[in-house]
Image 1 (cartoon, rainbow, N blue to C red):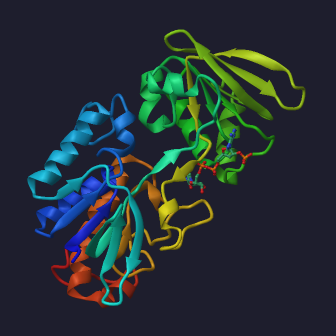
Image 2 (cartoon, rainbow, N blue to C red):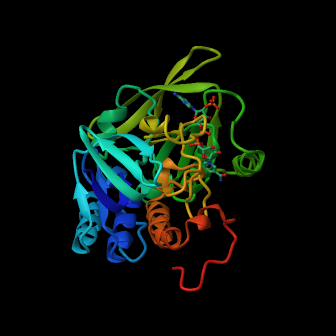
Length: 331
Ligand code: NAP
């Protein structure tokens, strides 16, 4: 007989650990299955400065605290447990398979996270791993580049929003895009171009260009850019490289279980994090429309964990419109 839990959480990143804290503290029998170690993307973050109420903390330190807090309320966290399959059973429970072990849950919160798409150029991994000038998050890291010159790469909404954000901190930001038209929405492109066209603007845009190499000694010092129209290469000095070329959700194992977008994000509504399968929530960067921030990932997980109570009380709540008023005391 498989072990039965009220709540099984897939993934121990911020979304999963936030969910675990709330679920366990509400006295639900809670299990977290994590493929590697708790923490998700913050494990690779030197300094977190945008977690409200904490001035500054190293990513692994915060991950440890999130884990400890969930354990304090008796959440069970198993590491090295890759979930390979999920199945909705006839009696409404959900079967979760990891290796040759099967677990049963009354609800499941999917929180496997996502990873940044990489450029795949020499220097990218080395400078990223050393925290020496390659970043995938302007919102997180812009303050570390105050007064410096940086390059940002990409042509989607993230690249433009983050370039505008970086421009508030750095002396100069050069946005590199591989085509001569942006994929981003018109309103963002207009905002960018308005700033670019101001006298003494600190934003420069280079179109039809790609990065081929990131170079430096202890820290990033330059990037090699290739103009795709002329084939000319140039060594472009910079103190940092911000890469915004999309995200890849960790959802391959879910493709036969739940509906994903073309890009692989889990489809769900974003008020209570319900998917189309009753009892299955999605939380954090794996879900469509996620804000891709530490705080918002925790927010998703907490909401999903709180809403299990509503579902247990009335399974029909699953199909109620997101705007419906919760039952009194529903939280
Ligand atoms: P995205 O929309 O997939 O854009 C990725 C960009 O990176 C594209 O411009 C793409 O170029 C470029 N790119 C991909 N691989 C590359 C490579 N190897 N070398 C150079 N450039 C490369 O990703 P995103 O901007 O992260 O956005 C993800 C999703 O979140 C989107 O649906 C977006 O609309 C949404 N989002 C929305 C908002 C908002 O509404 N405010 C903010 C942020 C994100 P091509 O254009 O040539 O393919």
